[in-house]
Length: 175
Image (tube, rainbow, N blue to C red):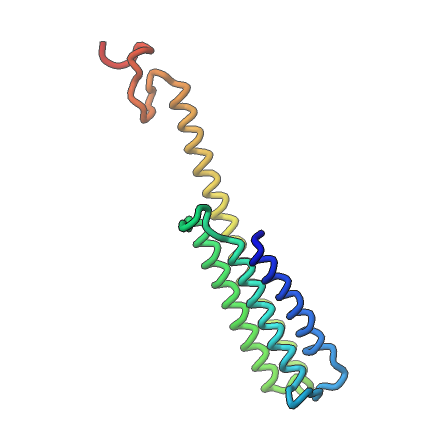
């Protein structure tokens, strides 16, 4: 893991910890400091922590050689960005809707919204992981098949159906 990724993860941990305390653990729901609503500030810190953690994940998936980016890295980054964007969008909609309905007064609606949002988020993550696992398995199977074909071609000097031309030193080819 690179130094940048470690720094981003450390910053995400700090921001998430402070944000969680400010957003959810304050006794006074209307606590302010210098005119700043501390619960809202805590939620912003939690969002910042999410962005920093995503940045750390993306920075750890990089080019194999300087200046190049392979297709697998690109797939991983774009898939991660899509999943994170979906989770953020669903979470934002759920938070805004629950806030507009009044989280304390309309508990049944709040539970329904939260449950639906969690269902959508788990579907996003499950689909991403399933597609990623299938793609990885397919890549491994393709590489293994290519290696097997190469071994068979190397072990059969007569060229028996392989892609290599017959070797005249082994009795194959023109005389």
